Length: 172
Image (cartoon, rainbow, N blue to C red; front, side):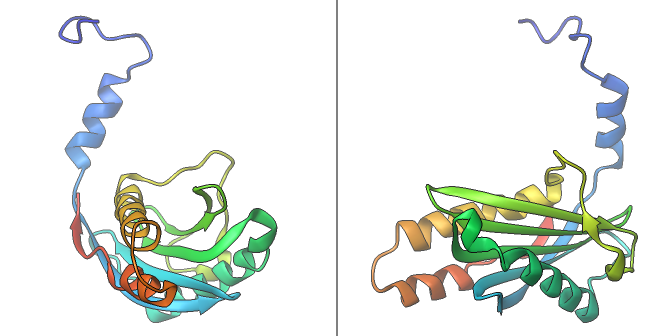
């Protein structure tokens, strides 16, 4: 296929170029590894320009994650999770990513209006991470593979290395 000629009909050139024009970096910072519903949860704050993830927002997200993770064993959870608290440009998002049996993962996405964590609800069916959230999850896939699956030594040492391996700074 020659991509220098005419594009396939489903390609939205105006939509793609509009996204490219408005694309910007967002800031990600680690917020520690905590416990929720018996899981080790590595927490991240992800912030759009002019937005901040507050401690109250992180606490609300951890509570939400705990409720979700309480049924983790029924979904094959291995007890390790990543929580992304995203103060986005168009609202707030909470992602709960959990490693499960068979080298698989489970993902729950919650959405709500900006600054109102009590109104976070499960996202629509099929909703997946945005480009910035996906960058954090890509880092976490590497950290999990490197330290937990490919690591050596006792499991507590592997988990400590996984917990310490965090993404931080601008995310493109």
